[in-house]
Length: 279
Ligand SMILES: [Zn+2]
Image (cartoon, rainbow, N blue to C red):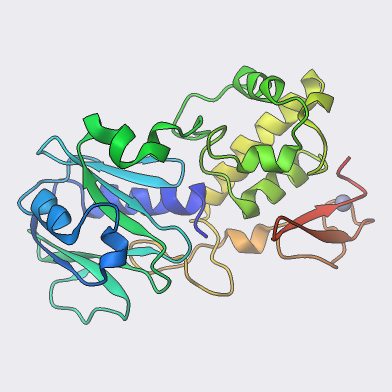
């Protein structure tokens, strides 16, 4: 599933290729991806509008329109946004096609159809996209200081670090891959309670969050074996080559050279860590 670095890479592509363009026409295929409102609402809300900016909150893409409304896209499990020349053959599972005024098209492609595309009035965000209004701090888009993290850990002293990092209401954008990589970088066990971190450890965790996400963005995100995540031009990222623990269960730890990467399953999701260098 695309996480903050992948969605940020898509956002940068949108800023380059779609911002400033007028949407001339919209075609909707599968209605499941517009389930939040309707196909008519998407077509009416987008047609004729100019895209003013490309913003991101956590894993949500937010594109303000010159109508005062906003286009929101969430890729969920397998969604992709792709730009192509007008008339190009659309890949299977292209559920929304936006025909732009520069001779290109923006496609929303999603084999599993968990993703969604919606146009809404920002004044109605609580009613239409309530989870967007309740997102926690974004560690890249917002000013995110060590003291912000300290306050977060203090509010949930008994929670384990991994579920805390995954909680979108607390910190927005981190998913399973980057939670594992961040905790490894900070040399902290995923099941360690938030209250057990002293000031120095909080600083290390803060640095790890910013560094891992920043490096992953610079690498264009992670494209795993399923190759579902690609950027706007259809290219994969390369950060998967730099994963130290995620997907490396059973391998020798390349950080300390002594431990073996363990994989434990909690709540249906795998957690990867080194029992030697993560304490
Ligand atoms: Zn290790």
